[in-house]
Each structure stands twice: as structure tokens, then as C-alpha cells.
Amino acid sequence: MWKKLLIVATVVGAAVFIAKKVKDANDERALWHEATTAPDLR
Image (cartoon, rainbow, N blue to C red):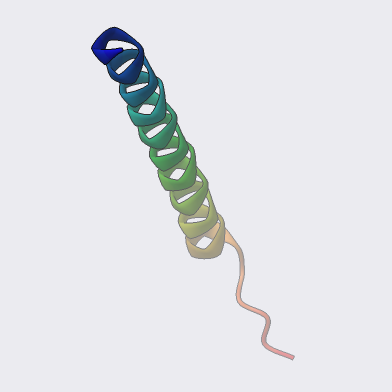
């Protein structure tokens, strides 16, 4: 029982960690895109 719970907790923890890394990478890419594109001066 505890072994299954530990495995599930590890998988959930890994999924949360990966999701955070992906979100951080997307946020960083969006920030660089905003910083390096020319302003729209229309």
C-alpha cells in the first residue's frame, strides 16, 4: 500500500516539476519576444 502511494506521489511530483519548467520556459520565451521586437508605433 505505502509503496503504491509513494510511486503515485513521485509521479505527481515529477509532473508538477515538469509542468513548472515548461511554463517558465514559455514565460521566458514570451518575455524575450516582447523585449526584442520593435514597438508598434501606429
